[in-house]
Image (cartoon, rainbow, N blue to C red; front, top):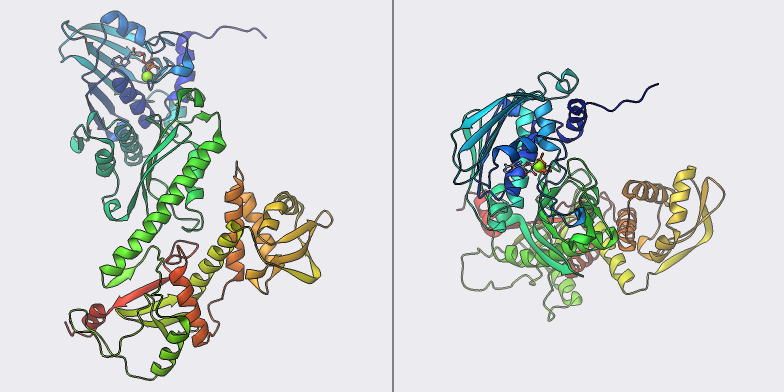
Length: 579
Ligand code: ADP
Ligand code: MG
């Protein structure tokens, strides 16, 4: 076997396999170059999703002809003047993009430094195709035509122009969010798609994310130990079936980093169903020495020196913001719309009306005709319903929903969803107070599971113990349950352990203790809550309503759906055509 040095053209083709996967990745590299060149305005034109043409023009520094020739050579970059790669703040630094793209397409590079004449170089699949003067404004214009036309292996993996276009649009959006101080235009098949003026970051993000976030978003701004996190995220109730609206940036660099995505997910844990995804634009700023950007050819992943701190900042920051907002929005909705889908509620009932009083009143009024108080009427009702935000229970429907009458309308509660939430919040509060009541089993229960599941549970035994669930290993494929959280009551230990094991398996990754506890609590809560189908007494229903009013986040079940809805009087009147 003889070893040979590969010719530069082949090296470029190999690099192209990593750097330019599809039109969107070539486009990303070109726009990054424009931004690195100090452009104030970047114009992108595409045909057929970039398969036919990608053109990027900028008003940046431009290059003189010598620089242009060098730029097309492999490992030629102007962005590492010293060898301090860990201090790099430009998007590029590897000197690979241009030669790689030029090796798998027909590329025309035109550039002009202010005060000089423009120049043009053409490359056809890595080979020079001539050069000469060019007329263009100061800056650079690059055209890439027939990308991968002559690389059948690669061509096979390209998708329809439509989906390649979608990926290109996504790439432009990400860079446009990263650099709101730069103006962008995007044209596809001759149609103008985006026109973005220079703006501040919140304005740019608002332009590019769903406008619904005005009402359903929460602003983020937190700092910890020199790390800063800013941006906007959606309320848990405003979610999507795909994780395609999540824009993450580290030091202004768009990334698709697994750690960050995982932290975002973890922040919404138990607020949102597993198969739903929040919308987010999050900007993480960290000292340069805390992050290594040179771990991925397309530079979309980074490595943090202290991943646990980053994860903690994100989860803590987002949780805090969501909690605060949920309190605020509950108050807002209380005051406004007739039909109230609430994201979360944390009402404090009036202290003057204790539980005993309300029970009495409600018992007296059960068979009385309902007195409506039209919202528009000014004088107070003769006999007002006690002013509990969630009202007093009037009955149960389908052994699943509690129907209650509040001062301002009719409240319907999903008893299982609501109770599950209450159990979870109760367990959390107990945990934070440091005392989780447990109930020892008279006869410890043996639960059979497969070995990896047993290993997982054993590995989390301490955290589970903190939650009131005492288990220990009992042979290779069984666990012994000695005590369960008192909040649970009677429970199916085997089912609970199986669920916990799969939860732990699914989460994996660097999990903080707090996250683990949260997931355990959520799983336990689901097992311990009132099932749909259980008949409740009026007293039980009222107790549930009162507890919901004082429990944070009780307006939403552990999967992000509302636990209750309110039909306001005006809304009811509308239903009957009275208005
Ligand atoms: P990198 O960006 O990693 O340096 P590239 O292959 O993308 O590598 O680009 C090589 C060099 O070409 C850059 O370092 C830069 O000096 C020059 N260059 C590329 N695009 C532009 C542009 N739009 N404006 C000015 N200079 C550019
Ligand atoms: Mg580059």
